[in-house]
Amino acid sequence: MKPIRLTMTAFGPYTGTEVVDFSALEASIFGIYGETGAGKTTIFDGISFALFGQSSGAERAPEDMVCHHAHATDLTRVELVFDLGSERYVVWRIPPQQRAARRGSGTTTQSHEAYLFRATGMALEDITEDNAGEILAEKKVGLVDARIEELLGYNARQFRQIILLPQGDFRRVLTASSDERSPILKQLFDVGLYETFVAQMKTRAATLARRISDERIRRSTLLGDQTEGQLDET
Image (tube, rainbow, N blue to C red; front, side, top):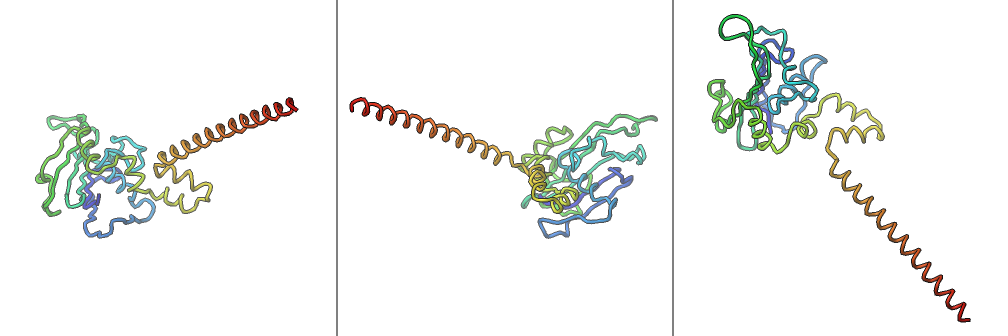
């Protein structure tokens, strides 16, 4: 999955609309750098939220993504244009929030909504709110989540483990001692399969060790009985 354009409106600390254009990037692996407070985590949150409806650290609920400093008429919304092989897709996501009522005064509750489009063959500048391509799944979050996971081949947890490595965790890996690095890597990467394999090998080894021990005891007992028999005959 290659991000092409991220658009965030009234999202996180941003009261207006911010656009991050990744289209000029040719590398498949890249870093996002900046001073503390520059908004790096918000970019990660925007990508993760657009795809999976979760923050990059899975620590905040969707409604926590809403910018509380924005005007009630500004709907919090995230759009991500991304390429997957030769295919291009667009995903919109709107978190739960209180927004200005369309009729009269006051506010109304906006539910969590998501939309997924196929935009293969469309130039980036041609993708707009009114023209985002062929609709694949709309409005129902569960439907969009399922289609995105099907397309990508991984879920939100796996995305954070193999695609998105937050700055804090990267720093921990670099500065940790050997003993400390192991649990950090276990937290970042799913090693459950290998741990299960090791546990199975230990169980098999213990079973074989007990069997060998039992056979040795049995052999010693048989040899002892044979020796006693020979002595009796003598």
